[in-house]
Structures are given as structure tokens and as C-alpha cells.
Length: 431
Image (cartoon, one colour):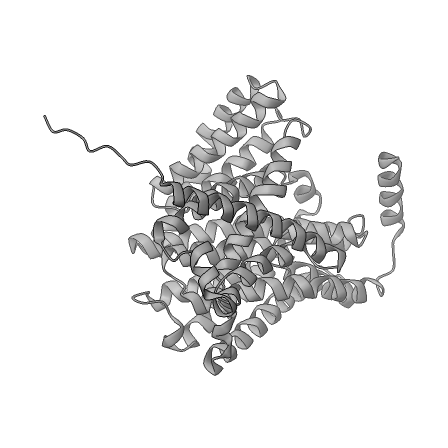
């Protein structure tokens, strides 16, 4: 009988570096995130800036010895941070699924569907075409150009519900029809985005055609999630009747669902998202019970994930003319595609020109979701450092663009009686 070799515990120096990294990244992410909010920007901008400051964009050039000590280029050391970040992003996506308001989708279904479909198809097509046209030097080694083009299309067509919702709240636009439509269409975009991300991820890892993966995903979502997952989640949540138990139960189910889809060769994020939807639709979850989980994920794990994501950005690559030109092209395509798609969908729904432009501005914010997509692409080897930096840059710029354009356009949209009544009801509730 062979004796198993003992697994060596984490070394003292590795542990020291890991704890310092987590503490420093989290502290700076909170500080710069709050500074960004005070300056009228999304918190994610400050959180990503932490990684930019401490990563290859700045610290590696200003103080290389400090950078090598604090952020050693050892796979094992970096993977410790990645592991914590992955737990954070899976729980963040799971919470997004839990908080999806399907009543809102039903109320605004037809109009939101037109806006969402146009706002998905047009930027998806623009992104795929751009992926084929970008120079081969920007593609990761051994990546198929079709997989890369489809991945870029997915990155171009997503929206970011957390950024959209926060922007609308800050600007007091949630009660407006445009705000409601933005959220509804954004939810549909999110769902489609995670679905397409799994399709492209499956193509990258297994080489199976997109149609085969899409059919597998539809079977998983429609058959397993509805027939098996939904009643199972209801039974489990029925027994989680205390706040602490509910939090642990939600975390366990989200992580196991993510593990299940990952084991099937699909993207783990899809499992977390679908599980979140099932939990939210179970009718067994009190919002107050999940408040502690929301606090930990949104205030600790999510900022740490975005700071870690920023560490992989290398803005010095933009000094190369070819990379800078590609970044400009991708940014223009991303903005134009989303604006054009949302505008066409809104006009087909007989909304005014200014309402259509406001919807384009709101749905153009990609923030959180696009950063997650970029991290998945880097992990799968679909993106290299240059294309990863470009996509994260698009996420930042589009999130910064949304508030001023929304403010400009909504000042030209007259408030309706229905919107004033909705605002009065909201004010009555918060008193």
C-alpha cells in the first residue's frame, strides 16, 4: 500500500503576504471607492483604481522592489487572491439573481423586451464584427478568432444592473418611466449575458459548437432548474427560518450550483445566477434575513474582487499605437452599438427621442458585469493583457458616461402624472 505524501501547509511568508495583500487591497478599495462616490463616480471606478495603482500600471514602474515583494509573480501566491475573489463574484452574481424583480418585468414586459432585444442584438453583432477585424497581434495565443469575436460581442452587449440601479437612485429617477424601463431591460440583458458567457466559455474550453452548448444550456435552465431546482430550493428554504440559517443556506446553494455548472463544462457564474433567481422566486426569503450577506458581499468581497481585477490591468500597454487605436475602436463600437440598439428599441415602442436617448445612456453603463466578463475571458485564455485592459477600460468609461448624459436627456423629458403619483407613494413609504 502506497503511503500518501503529506500536503505541506501554507508557508509563513506566503501567509504573511496573502494577509497583507487582502488587508491593503480592501482598505484602499473602500477609501478610493468612497472618494469616487463623493466625486460623483461609481464606486467600482475607485475600487479598480486600487489595482491600477498597485499593479503593473504604476507601482511596478515606480517601486519595482516593493511591487515584487508585495505582489510576487508566483502563480500560487496570486491564486490565493483569485480564490477569494472568485467566491466574492459568485456570491455577488447570486445576490443579483435573488434581487431580480420579475413583477417589474411583467409590468413593462413588451416595451422592455423590444428595448432589450435591440440593445442586445445590435451591439452583439457590432462586437463580433469588431473581433474579426482587430489585428491578430491583439489575440491571445492559440485562441480561435471566432471564439474571441463572440466573446467580444458578449462583452459589448451586456449592461450592469448594480451600476444602473445606483445611478438611477442617486439621480432620483427610479420613479420615472425611463428608470423603470432601464432596470427591466437591464435585467433581461443580464440574464442573456450570463447565458451567452457560458456558451462562449464552453466553446473556448470544449470546442463544441455554439448551437450544441446553447441547447445544453436551455435544457439545464428550462428542465433541470424549473422541474428539479425550483421545488428543491423551496423545500430547502422552508427549513431555513432563521436569519443565520438562511444566509448559510443561500451561500451553500449558490456555491454548489456554481460548482455543478462548472463541472458540466459551463461557466460557474451561470449556476450562481440561476440559483439566485430560484431562491428569489421561492417566496421563502425575507429581505432582512439576507442583509448581513449583502453587507459582507457588497462591502468586503466585491471591492476586493474589483481591486484584484484592477491588478491585472496594464495601462502602459496603451502607449503602443496599435493597442491605443484598438481601445478607441472598441470603445466607440461599444457606446454606439448600445445607444443605437436601445434607441431603435425605444422608438419602436413609440417613446420620444429624448426618452430613447436616456435609455441608451442608462443601458450603456457596463461596470460590474463587464469586469466579470473580462476576468472570465482572461482566466479562460480568450483574452490577453491588452484586450483585458481594453475591455475593463470600456467598463469604466461607459459607467462614467451614464450620469451626465442621463441628466442632460431627462431634463428634456416631461414628468407624467403617473410618475408623480409613483414618487408620492415612494415618499410615503420611506417616511
